[in-house]
Length: 498
Ligand SMILES: *[C@@H]1O[C@H](CO)[C@@H](O)[C@H](O)[C@H]1NC(C)=O
Ligand SMILES: *[C@@H]1O[C@H](CO)[C@@H](O)[C@H](O)[C@H]1NC(C)=O
Ligand SMILES: *[C@@H]1O[C@H](CO)[C@@H](O)[C@H](O)[C@H]1NC(C)=O
Ligand SMILES: *[C@@H]1O[C@H](CO)[C@@H](O)[C@H](O)[C@H]1NC(C)=O
Image (cartoon, rainbow, N blue to C red; front, side):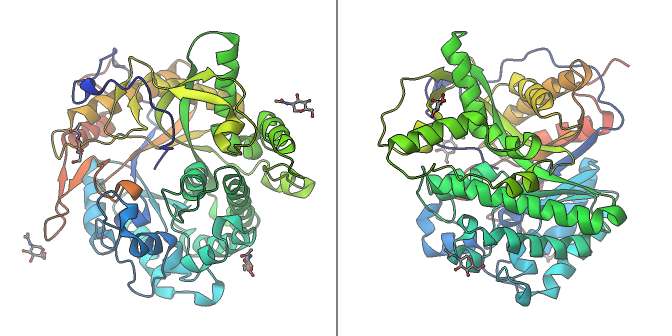
């Protein structure tokens, strides 16, 4: 997680909080037998053990330790769900759920504490090897994310995701992980949600490393993360894929976007919105180069600002080729939707991503808000976005690597049950009626956990964690029980038609 917090929020019907969701008809057909069910987490959000067994400081350790106010509750991930010690218990929870896949992330700073090869930490490697073996012994397929926002602080101090050489460091780290975990892990994601890393970490500064350069750094960050992704992809394919036979791709987060009206201007603005979000990362990988509208608009606005070159870094011909085609599937994190309107051209002088984008967004009046300001419930968004990705990027196979909702409920989370049922119903429509090949789904999240700048105030888990209890007690919520039935029956309702 997470998608942007910067969307302009209108039409929020606050009275709808807690009300039950409008229930469209829920699909009563079965998911294909080959469909893979799972749950997802990320290292910094659940592991704790932040400085144990040789682990180095990540930029999130540094960010939260330096200024506790960066999170709503002034808390951090030092302990989190303590999964670094309680991982055997987590595996038993997965087994109890009946899922066949677990999507977790590897903490770079356990493997290379400084980000450099000479800091190699065998204890970190051993931890993950033991962990994936235990997953397999319990019948659960591990899928691993190499980077879920926890950059080594030493690399951050050298420019982090603004420094091209971070892509090379990422490749070196990825090679170690492939070599050691590759015999067990067959589905990889390189970088999780590069847009959120860049926009929140380098644009509005709410996330680590807290840089606020919304018109410049966000574009350089995108470039370096895409180079890092492509570097790891090529290392995997050149050195490991033949023997290990796995798949590797980027994981991109996106809203589903609808025009506010059917006017030509709003329809065009909706395309711009999509290109400036989803296309920003998907186009270089699945088509080649930045979306043309980004090249044109940022280029033209930069020229009018009197800059010698575009704030959107140009790729060399060699880099274009290096990034293009680096995918074995499409990893999609999807939560929510936006209505998009055209606006007058923003004045020159405000060099911001938002002016570059040149659109306005809001929520549909009939969409249900959640406790997260950016996340509204609109189940059709799942079908709409899956079709968009399928038709525009031709990925062959899609994994919905994250999907879920925040609630305040500890155990009785009917809101989340309704959310998952609605979104999965729309996913099934996409699979059965639209021919979209969705191979698997890893819900966000297995556990309540450290929700970045929101601290522990927003709970995304289907399993609750009592953060005040001695043993960080895990308890199935109603949604976990619902999901358990679903993954065991491949059916979203009590009984499916055969
Ligand atoms: C980029 O990182 C390299 C080390 O990988 C370092 O030598 C260089 O100074 C960094 N550049 C900047 C601008 O920080
Ligand atoms: C940007 O400027 C070029 C000419 O320099 C023009 O062809 C193009 O239409 C402009 N694009 C936009 C989106 O304004
Ligand atoms: C959820 O909890 C937060 C923090 O305790 C509170 O501010 C908010 O009003 C609650 N929202 C709902 C819908 O209960
Ligand atoms: C926590 O776990 C330990 C070790 O299993 C156990 O001895 C202890 O009784 C537990 N505490 C609580 C409150 O359940």
